[in-house]
Length: 246
Image (tube, rainbow, N blue to C red; front, side, top):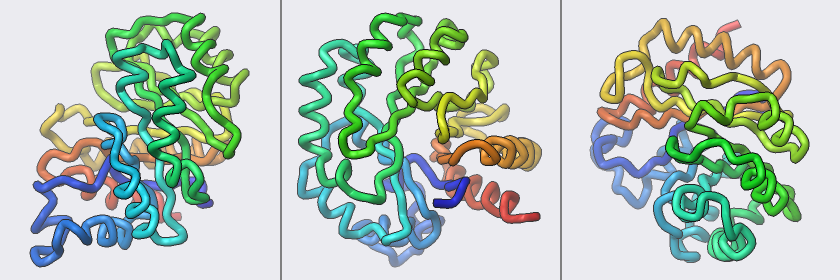
């Protein structure tokens, strides 16, 4: 696996039609076109609703052999249950996503906590102890409240071989780029131009340098989530170009 994989958070965006996707490319072939450009994707629709099993199976058939995907866990577990009742919730999720979980192209599983979820070491420890690993699953947590960014929480992640996901947003000066295991996920939400602005050349160059540094110690999965006005695939391509330079 390359030390850095770059893609987008999802591929089904109507605003990309006629731009990233060619005019005559039907939606049923969008995944194939996406996978011809990028070698990884964050499956973020699994966060909002559980896809039907036949849909999940179709995704696995359509992805090329050298492709990899990150699965974003259900908001039911992270935002509604807030990491309680993990046993049954995880079982239900894994049953639906079984074709993805068992696929050798599966990358990490992302657990994004809401900004209103304050630090709770006991609840986090309980969740970490119940994360499935029997099929080689690797997990990453994205914290959105500053109270989580303390040494004790980082030590908890390390003890369970779980990654700290890096969420890039200007209003998160507390976000650290700390490694807690041998991989990380970097999620590009938006830069200093705000939610409707793409990343500037300066920002992308700065991030290229950061990713190179991270990749000396860990595998990096980087995903652009700024899908407005087709910024995500453009920024992802440009970052990849910058990283390809010696």
